[in-house]
Image 1 (spheres, rainbow, N blue to C red):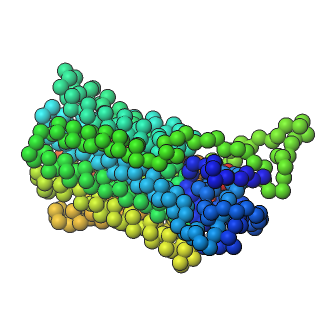
Image 2: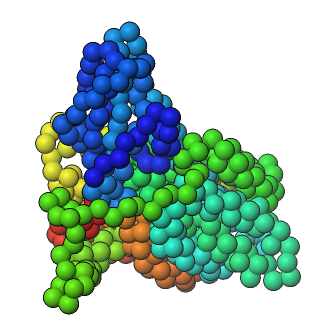
Image 3: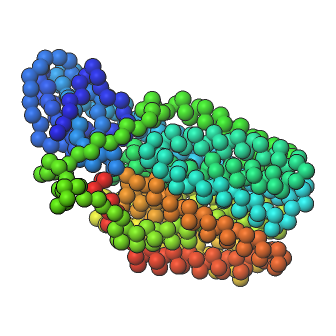
Length: 513
């Protein structure tokens, strides 16, 4: 069944638009074509006669979970004297879609920057407050506790309410927590107060990655999801470089508290600017999908008792989600080890310039991650690589190369070589976006937020334990990172073996696609 979208009541853009270029053809004047779009594919048009100007109504095709078999009817009036369809409202809708992605990517840039400033600012903070490595690891675990709590509910809310709405709501909360952190250092029990502020930051920023996955699932066309994910993580990784760079420069001339105030208020300003720059559709609640029968069936078959059959989660889905959880958890252990401890590792090598030096691996990470997204799309579109083989390739690139770098790093004493190895490790691990995150879009685009939230939650719990363990090892060994790097390298290798062997590439929830 299809419904007409009339010019006077053109529906607001709720999801990503379907571009009709090279599909809509010109017709004689005073004619109107009715095109029925189903999930991005146009079926045979029917014709009606009606005079009027050439106007292409704002149109959408619902994708992912929100589509099912839902169809929309697009009314197109054409006239030789009027503009071509390429100049119609479709391009405006596409521009809105791109604006949503970039505004949300900007939020992720600040999210990672706000996270990374702590790895630099905590050095003078620890000296001022007398905190040891175990205390700093406790603060990191407090952040991870809040971060893990909102992964699943954040992903669920993003899939149900809209990724942009949940992302900017979380951003408001984490911005305030960054501003409040320096005030917590003045308490009589600063460690407890700081831990609460870090947990609040984690609670707000925990929705960021699941919400960003929902944004891509809701606003980016299927054939461009890899590059869409790469765009989001381009700015996310740039934030990892921007944070320590600016923080490293600031702590040389200003008290460490100024770092948190600067980034906290910058993030708060982006909340205001970004929210009101979003298209109205991105700020509006999502409408619940209308159930539709499958092709060739009017109703779902009933059981002998007359009740519609219920579908549980299959063993296949459970096993695949378990594999994905392991892959994500293993990556998180490597990523957070690099992110949290690189400045500490570089401090004996670069002294007061350690914070600045720690920024460059993440700028490289941003460039490599984005290039990997474009390369993945090229391999699939132009070289005929299957989605699964493409994801496996980038899983290997993002795990085996960092593993080799960390193993070498365990036995080197050269500052220059150590810095180069960290650059290569941080850059290569960024291709995980084109391996795992794009894989989630392949197999469960409509549930991307929830699935990323679920797998990331278990990943965060593993990182919490690893963070405390790293702090303990460094305290006991006099900041000897060799053991830490060797264990992390082994985790990276396990990531590739499990992911390449057991990820199937099959749709997890085909009925909702």
